[in-house]
Structures are given as structure tokens and as C-alpha cells.
Image (cartoon, rainbow, N blue to C red; front, side, top):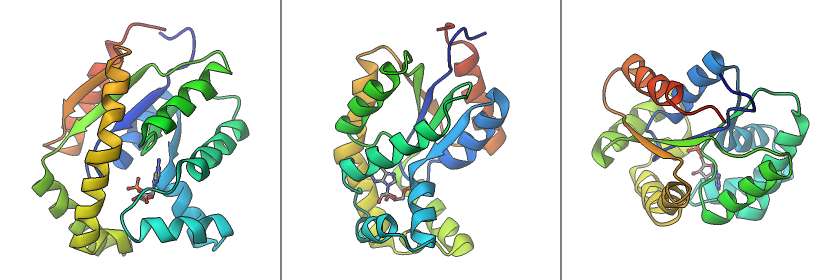
Length: 197
Ligand code: AMP
């Protein structure tokens, strides 16, 4: 078991199933699920200034600037001081975000326990996102051009975050093809084998 908090990053391209799996992990390990995409969509739905600002980037498949994203994440963490741990979904997406997250946790005497990447090939991702867009009506999930831009953004700005945590010996990868339940099992296995921190 864990003496301190279990702080996980669920990593992977858009459409790799991070949101679905993060919910399952949050339930099983009693963690607070923080999805920056969901937080932005919530702001957008309420038409707040933050939501309006974020929309300009989300609609183009680009990242919302670090300063805005990190500020929003800090607020969320500060609003929930009494938790067993966090599962970060869709954050960090840049090296400055990863550095800010490490600093934020260190200030609280904590650290990231592990980053787990869900590996799914590009073509599968595009099909999955288009299907999700049909079901959810999410505008950035309905236009193949925006989806390809999000994948390019992921490659250029987000993939280096994997190496950042690999250098800390905290990065793991699981196969993201298969049934939702099979992928969950793969995640549980990695987490249950982590040495207690
Ligand atoms: P997601 O639901 O995680 O795919 O996020 C949807 C969109 O929200 C992304 O395409 C970005 O425009 C924005 N977004 C979500 N998380 C972040 C982040 N950590 N940094 C910058 N932009 C983000």
C-alpha cells in the first residue's frame, strides 16, 4: 500500500481512452480525477472569460497557453487538499507544464508516482475520435483536419513529456488496443506493481 499519495499521469494521444480509463482508476484507487480538457469544456459551457479564451485554441486543435492551463490546474488542486492522490488526464501536455506540476506537488511534499502511456496507432485514433464526435457532438472531434492538428500538436509538444518522466524512471507504456476492460487490467497491473512511495 502507499504511505503517501498515489499521483498518476495517464498519458497518450487524443482518443487513446485516457478519460474512460482515468475514471476507472479514480474509482478503484480513490483518486481525484483531474482532466484539463473537461475543466476547459466546463468553463466553455458556462461561457466564462477563461472558457472564451480557451475556445480560441481548442477550436484549432492547439494547446491553451501554459500560463492559463497551469493556473487552472493549481486552483483545482488547491480546492481539494484532502485527497488520497490524483489522476491527471490530459495534463501535463508540455515540458513547462510538467515542471510546474512537479513543483506544485513538491511544495506539498509530494511527487508524481508514475506516468502511464496508452499506446494506440494514429489511424485507429482518428476513427475513434470521429465516432466519439458523432456521439458527443464535441466540435473538435468532428473535423478530421482539427483531429490531425491535435495529433501533430501531441507529437511536437506533448511527447517530450514522456521522456521527461522516463528520465525520472517513472514512465510506463501499455497497449491501448483491445476491450476497455482489458486495457483497465493492463493499467491495474502496472499500478499494483509500482513500489510503494
Ligand atoms: P482533451 O479533452 O484532453 O483532448 O482536450 C481538449 C482540448 O483542450 C485540447 O485540444 C486543448 O486545446 C485543450 N487542453 C486540454 N488540456 C490541455 C493542456 N494540458 N494544455 C493545453 N491545452 C489543453
